Length: 116
Image 1 (cartoon, rainbow, N blue to C red):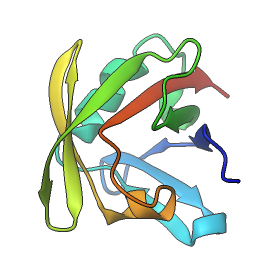
Image 2: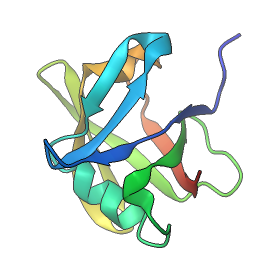
Image 3: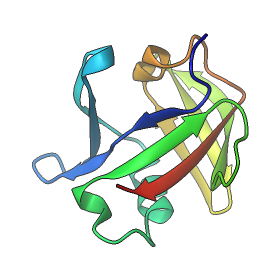
Image 4: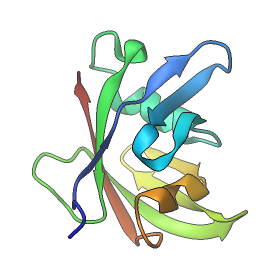
């Protein structure tokens, strides 16, 4: 049985000026967040000191205690999916790396950021 709550550790990479993460378990190194997601992350980690040095990002297709944001699936594009957040209002594209963690793009993704 796969874990319901997944965890990655994003950090800010100055050379590409965006949030990235590494996960050797799924063969990803400096995988960048793009197209609206960096701005969503900025808002999510606003209260975490030194978040750019790294933080824990928990995510799941099902709600879990103390999640901070619910992202709602909008539309497919280039093999990835656009998701929206109502509070704060935003849209961002999750690339096909999403499928290294989930078999399909869920209708909703629940997220929480924590200090390391």
